[in-house]
Amino acid sequence: MINLTETIVQTVVNKRPKQSHKGTFGKILIVAGDKNLGGAAIMNAQAAVYAGAGLVTVATDSVNKTAIHSRLPEAMVIDYHSDFTKLLESVDVVLIGSGLGESIDVLKKVLNKTKDEQVVILDGSALTLMASYQLPLPAGQIVLTPHQMEWQRFGEVPIADQDKEDNNWEALVSMNPEPILVLKSDQTQVYLENEVYQLTVGGPYQATGGMGDTLAGIIATFAGQFHPLGQAVLAAVYTHSAIAAELAKTNYVTLPTAIAKQLPQYMKKMAEQEPHL
Ligand SMILES: NC(=O)C1=CN([C@@H]2O[C@H](COP(=O)(O)OP(=O)(O)OC[C@H]3O[C@@H](n4cnc5c(N)ncnc54)[C@H](OP(=O)(O)O)[C@@H]3O)[C@@H](O)[C@H]2O)[C@@H](O)CC1
Ligand SMILES: Nc1ncnc2c1ncn2[C@@H]1O[C@H](COP(=O)(O)OP(=O)(O)O)[C@@H](O)[C@H]1O
Ligand SMILES: [Mg+2]
Image (cartoon, rainbow, N blue to C red; front, side, top):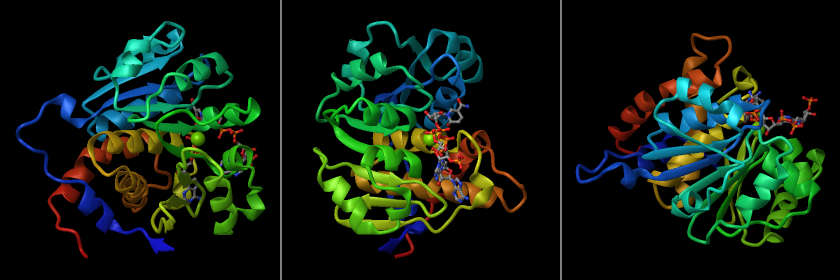
């Protein structure tokens, strides 16, 4: 087990090259938010935009369109009941599942069309629905972001057994392609390439609905602009909780939207620091 420290963020988040444009920093498609859970789509997208995604499009229930546009003019919005195949084929990263509720048709439509070279992040309801409908993993470089109950449903590892690494590895190696697992709890761990990384920052001030939706947006955007994927995921997980820990010095709770707002400032600081190796 390896403890995650700020070094991972200092290593991954670097000064931007001058010769660049929005396409350099990742095209992200977020598929999220049914008619009752539009907030999840907003929190995914806010985190993605503030973490520096080049282009963010949200495919969501049409009732969420006005709210997303008014909260986040940087993001584009498309009705997820329409045909968005062309858009799906053109993006680097697909994040699907936050607040997706029971939208199984949308989920199936997307999972059938992802490509091997795309990063596909499966969160929230995507994992719950895939478990109930026994859907296979889609094509792509897969990142799973379950909380403990979602991992119990999807990975079939009972919550009481999730503290034993071997149980989680057993579930992961049976999956094809073998995904990266961000197993969220008050002791979040990342399972990546035969190694387990332990998060050492963060705390109960983060126990608010939407906290995972925000993390998923950060992971998607880091995956779109920093490489290799595993390092980007580790840096995103650390960044999310490090910002929360900083905010918690003066705040009883650290709201997901408040964490998103701090992303540009924190990333600037990290980009200017040499890694403490
Ligand atoms: N504003 C919005 O639009 C929001 C939209 N959201 C979206 O809603 C969808 C459903 O997501 P969900 O996580 O709320 O529900 P579900 O999957 O049933 O899990 C809850 C069950 O698991 C249990 N549990 C055990 N261990 C746990 C742990 N470590 N962490 C968490 N739970 C744990 C827990 O136990 P209990 O609380 O009863 O003790 C309970 O029985 C999802 O797509 C999400 O993105 C949310 O983000 C909220 C804001
Ligand atoms: N007590 C806690 N200590 C540290 N982190 C926590 C705590 N409670 C929740 N979190 C973090 O908050 C996030 C919750 O994710 P999730 O349950 O998916 O939220 P949501 O689906 O409501 O957005 C995870 O990153 C988890 O690690
Ligand atoms: Mg969640």
